[in-house]
Image (tube, rainbow, N blue to C red; front, top):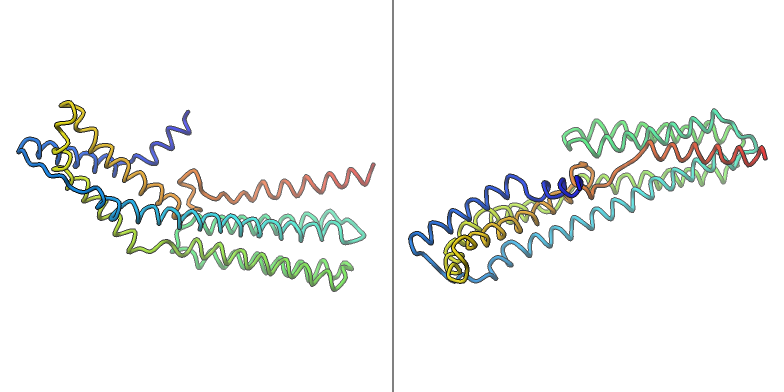
Length: 270
């Protein structure tokens, strides 16, 4: 129940209340001064609904791309961990813990970068690539010197390369948004059109009871602003404001790696 209420508050915010109030006031004044007009609703579809739906679809595709690249980042990191655990004759707990720590730090620094403002991107990106560098040194120094075959070391480096590629692709989703001019276009008409349609709601007043006539401008404004809010929450899938954001759970990832190592140790002992 609380989650549903939170979702409603994300959709119906102060902007929706202000625009609905302006639309209601405009309708009241038009009825009072007997101003009415049968405006075409196609203007709403052209100026607001179509651009917003296009932006929502674009933002959703960007979110799905971010999820695919996040899965690639985790899966290739897990492959490096499996190589550390399974491809060597001796199972060194310290080496496994070092690998888990490096992968966990990488995901933590990635999460911190994407959840921070873009003005801090350069500094936080250096931290992420520092983690990539430490993971590269781990493959070269600890795995190769522990006896891992050169072909398998090369494969681990390929896994690392794919992790870097996945990070860069996620970074582009984080860095580049939907066109600003399209957003400005939608914001302008969402703010202007509901009050300007006061004469149209006054024209429909004869079909409603005296109190119900004001329901139309309120619904009109709330629906349009809610669509705009949906697009805004999908715009940045890493800000953790909307309920559909991408959550980089570094702690769970590290915990699952540790649990897998313990299960393998028990099977060996058995």
